[in-house]
Amino acid sequence: MTTISVDLMGGDHGPKVIIPGAALALKRHPSIRFQLYGLEDDCLAILDQHPALKAASEFYNCEMAIQMDAKPSQALRKGRKRSTMWQAIEAVKSGKADVCISAGNTGALMAMSKFCLRTMPNIERPAIAAIWPTLRGESIVLDVGATLDADAQQLLDFALMGAAMARVLFGIDKPTVGLLNIGVEEIKGQEEVKEAGLMLKDLDLTGLHYAGFVEGDDLGKGTVDVVVTEGFAGNIALKTAEGTARQIGEYLRAAMSTTIMAKIGYLFARKAFARLRQKMDPSRVNGGVFLGLNGVVIKSHGGASENGFAAAVEMGFDMSRNGLREKIESDLEQYYARGPETISEEAISPEVISPKTASVEANVDQDEAK
Image 1 (tube, rainbow, N blue to C red):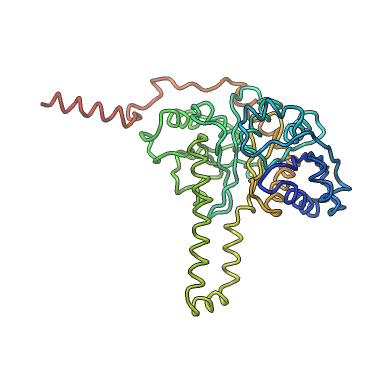
Image 2 (cartoon, one colour; image 1 turned 45 degrees about the horizontal axis):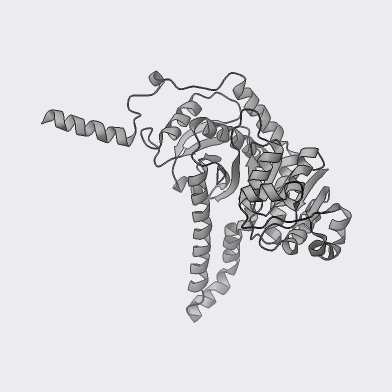
């Protein structure tokens, strides 16, 4: 039996969507039990409309809810111990719940999760991992917004954690891992990315296979099972993909309504368009997983529908049932037991130099020739 704690007050719609979404997930997975944290004036009437969920849940009335526009520091200071978000996270820490899910303020959720649960040994910063639809199925992309300007060691830690998540969700014994870069050549990219690539190349662990650098178009192709990047680039990539999906959807709707023949053509092809809508539906893969904490926390999209929130609950169910936290801890222990890899200057190929350095050296050569 899996117990999931839920912050009922987060997101754009709060309990009006979250409670029906949890009820839908329970219908699909009757073994789930819920710890629900909310404001009773906003939640109890809606909960009464879902008797099966009410019977499988314990409801806890809290003093306050974290606002979607609250600064993380303010949310942590004012909402600690008192808010629906904090108490849902603390249920994981105390062992009352296996997974916490919130659709609330991402920054506040990360700050509270890190403060309450703490990071795993040797993990300096957590990462947010997202499920990414691809031509081959699905991939995992991390980090998509938690850690900006990650160094080489942090990128390697992300690779280990992402590979463990891929084994849990996709059932792959040795998932392929790639580093997101501006090119596949070793001379390209930031120094931290190139150093992380060298470290991963020499890594000999049973839980992943390093496939080298990947580019932006590889995200949609599904070239690798896990794509690793730092949070700034990852978040931009995520928002760009979401916006592109909506843009294509609007183009299709407009194209299908321009003429009578287009409308007739749509009638014949409506099943194909239905399948396309399903593949492009963001709710199908809703849920960003906070990796690197002593507990599993999932961030649902704030604007998710009932189906979308149910998908986040089901993701949490799979994470708990398949032991995500334990697999991550095992991989990190295996790696750090032999000591973190360090890259000496001799190990770096002379050709692996930054574009800036190459430009300076080219100017020096030209001056000497003159």
